Image (cartoon, rainbow, N blue to C red; front, side):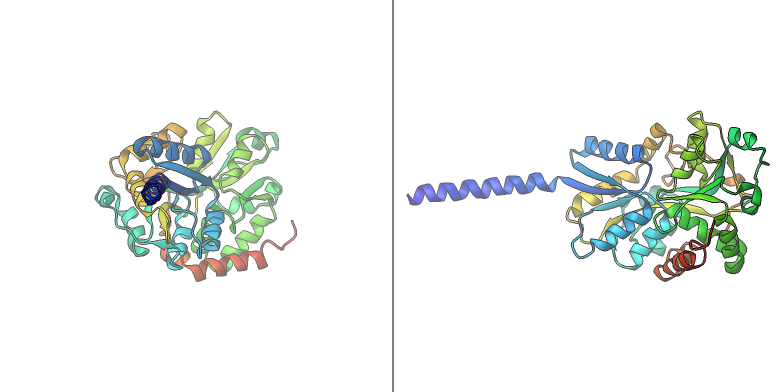
Amino acid sequence: MKRLSTLALTSIVALTAGVSAAQADKLTLYCSAQEDWCQLMARSFEDATGIDVDMTRKSSGETFAQIKAESTNPRGDVWWGGTGDPHLQAAEENLTAAYVSPMRAELHDWAISQATSAGDKTIGIYSGALGYGYNTELLAGNNLPEPSCWMDLTKPEYKGHVQMANPNSSGTAYTTLASMVQIFGEDEGFEFMKGLHANINQYTKSGSAPIKAAGRGETTIGIVFMHDAVAQAVAGFPVKVVAPCEGTGYEIGSMSIIEGARNMDEAKQFYDWALSADAQNLALQVNAFQVPSNVGAETSPSAPDMSTIKLIDYDFKTYGSSDERKRLLQKWDEDVSTLPQ
């Protein structure tokens, strides 16, 4: 009887160890890039490593809010993609973990600068300039002039023709808000946002949704990162991409390991893999036209040429800080979103 009990106990321990090992080979990925890119990254990492990936796609603002809500019991392991500002805020609030990847030597300086400014709690994976796109057929059909500047979008003739995301949920829209404050100064920047608000037909949840709506003919103009507008044009929609004349902000799309990740080893494996040229080249398969952070990765010839765009010296440290982001969003909620349209 004692021998049988010992054998049973040994079997249970072995079974438990096997189950634990099986459970360890997994990764929970929060993704804030476009859906098909998120899926491709998840499945490709599975193929490369045998690690099962549970991927959830949400916008940058939504993902930040989820990670914050789960901070006492983290459920995610890695947050990949989305604008850098909320990643920087997550780092400041100790929601993400410091990690220095051996892949850093292969990255552009701007990607490493993003890591340095956050105490190595995030890193740049791509960059892209802010702008807008418009549906050329709708513009002509409504006898509207071609816009070329930010201020054009506040003109009365564009009332009901402009769409952008809500800066509370979208990293793209928060970058828009922070860019206007930096381009025009805070007072004039908020006056611009008020003038723009009068012409907005809808605030979407996702940052790329406005240009997809423009491509489908549901709105005339969509404020987005320019690479998202290029994607619509390349897909055959009648979309023209605009780099605004006053200059514009840009994003450093980022990646972070979540503090307290249940699958830390797998998270680091994904982090290293995602910084490789091969992983970043996957963007080309889904027409993602950002500039990759690995110097050896390929940039699509259709991608916006950053050297020809008038980029502002975007202050990532200030506008990615928790206090400044909360302050600007509260001011937008109180002074802009409540205004009649």
